[in-house]
Image (tube, rainbow, N blue to C red; front, side, top):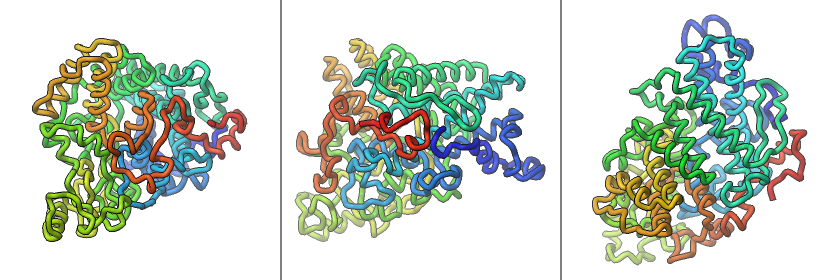
Length: 554
């Protein structure tokens, strides 16, 4: 029995939140709807799917009743989990000491390595609740009582894709990386396929068994979507729905993680067909809406949600009006940005020459008295640039600035507290997956041509043929993923796949402070270091009869 998962409450929650139709609301109170009724009709199953969309970004206490940790307001779904991938891996760098929501603890590697932490418990619980809800739909439809329609196929396709996404998230955080371990024997995560309490699962299976389930679910999702109604278009909410393109995208991610290079390349091409690469104006627009043309999947965050100071933009943006942001502008690894040519417009979104206005900056270089940038020969010039940046980018006079701070992630109303949308999948990622997969298959010319459309759009002088060995091209892929997907949550899993360490001191340094970062300043490569694997929540070990202390990750 999974910790806190004691009854099918997500069915109830989905109906409670998304029962917006007046006729439905007038029939009976939502808290009186049984699980059987919630699964009785195609329309009700659609409401359950909508509830799953909301749990991707809502604060825990609003949709996940249960224990103290899982119902905490301090984690708002993928508002937290998406930027966590860059925070943990040292891509999204803290310039000063601030710890709202434990965000500094994550960077210092003191959270995911603690079996009682809010992070390990909430991520586990969130993903398994998504799985529980998906199981309810999948198992109900499998009974064959509902007539098959394009809409029903669309619903069940989303359920399979959600389950695959959740297991992929779990196995990539709570188990050793597929390519650096022994997947046939390394412990994975428990597989839960039941619909009703007590939600008995198997013990920890192997990593391979979990990936086999993920691939089976994605194949089932794709098959369902092939006979489904098309996803609507035109509103930001539409892309909250998973469709066949998202399923192919998840297939590409899964294959990349497992070294199935041919499948990764093919799936990536299938996924991106209907999503043109964004141009410069869109790339520089702030990454705050799922309406961007190459966005394949994302959460359309309802503006009335109270996720303001729990949002993605609060944790990762430099324009949000919160203390985490004002006191601690997030910077990019200067080694990454310095490697970008001036002909690459993505470099414009990282303010290399921003003055260090923060007297509490962790590098001790805040204020004009410590200025070493020859662009500012007087304090007046230094202060004038600080004021100019605030005017251009919309933050307040209370916001600090710092060299290499980013302006890639910005709300639609900079200087405010609106949460805005969360982007989960873009077409650019699919070009990068195809290119990496072909390079790993020793198809260097194919890899060069795969990345050419993306590179030529971003860099007016781009020529992929200069990277003419597999080693050079893979290093180039690391750069391209680093700058293209910066802040979008991929770096932690990328480093595991590439077996790369975190080393903020190497090659001139990243700009991070060793005093601030502590254990997060250097971590040995994942194949040599068990700390890359999240601890299983102690509460789960205590509550689940199929787990014991011997199942805890080292």
